[in-house]
Length: 139
Image (cartoon, rainbow, N blue to C red):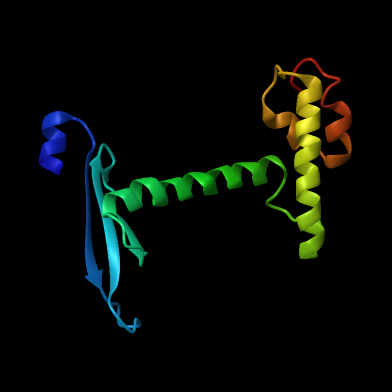
């Protein structure tokens, strides 16, 4: 793969599968491996699965999409201060996060396309919503 990368200059990728049993496992399991070589060197990925689909389809259509979904969840949590729970109880947070998302959407709709980047949302919570639409320039 390294030779092919050096010749072409494009990222090289191989997807394969094999059976493996770790010492702590009671039986062999199917592993899908994706090997990649690019500018940063080798980049291996391993997936343990029991799904009976082609390896390339599982990696590209299932595993990569799951990673993208997790990235969107992380972005949403960071944008809505989701890294710190609103309350100590699960049900309170379960109820609060959709309300925060609704408030975010309503303010975003009311203000139109904001001319400034996200840092306005990094202010303390008591000032955040009151000043979001009143400023025409970033703080």
